[in-house]
Image (cartoon, rainbow, N blue to C red; front, side):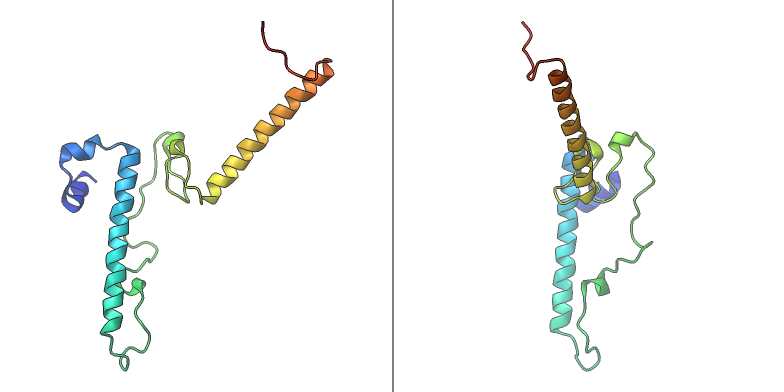
Length: 139
């Protein structure tokens, strides 16, 4: 990973090791977006100069960057602590939360919210059953 960051992204070894996980994720996302833009440009150029008699169907990005299962870099098996394990859907480490559009994160948030609401309702029930419909501040 260090060699790829030094060669492909142009970081020094010291700059690479000074990156925080969030900065690394951001840098990796920008690098991936630049690669995707190059793939789109390649597809556009190929379609502009495509011989429609030999290839009637237009080229797609997958013609130049196939996303076949098993090809390309694979995420290594994670052996670290559970709270550092990335989400399977949005690939953000759990301690950083999830992307806003991550369905797994939304389910997790709904479950936590439900337990908090349930605990709050239980506190109000207990305080009412004790004859105090509100919580008194400590004196």
